[in-house]
Length: 114
Image (cartoon, rainbow, N blue to C red; front, side, top):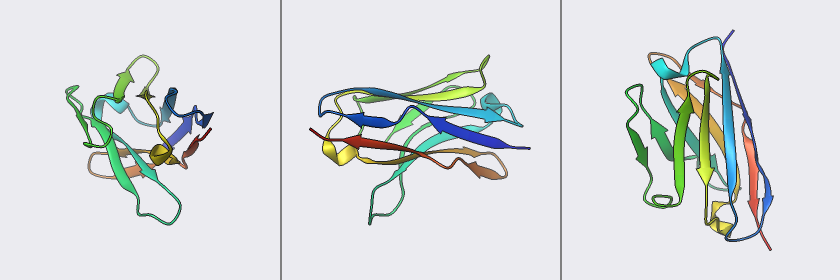
């Protein structure tokens, strides 16, 4: 059974950092395109960052230079390191796996506030 479980969210002050994890089961993350998305209250879901099976990474301009996506094949887990957080980064962060089919996790809440 395919499952994606996000963790690592929480409350952080502006300028702070968090590392999100997306633990996968039922498939191998290194063979899928893995992405992080986020959805703020009242807004549409937006793509944040992605890592392809060959290791190439891509970022939305709003997070470029602040966020870093990575993958640990041994742990079958994808990470999102988030630095220099600001209130506009507040959202539920979701993990997505895509090859032919797509799978989503349920998300983890990130709140940036003083």
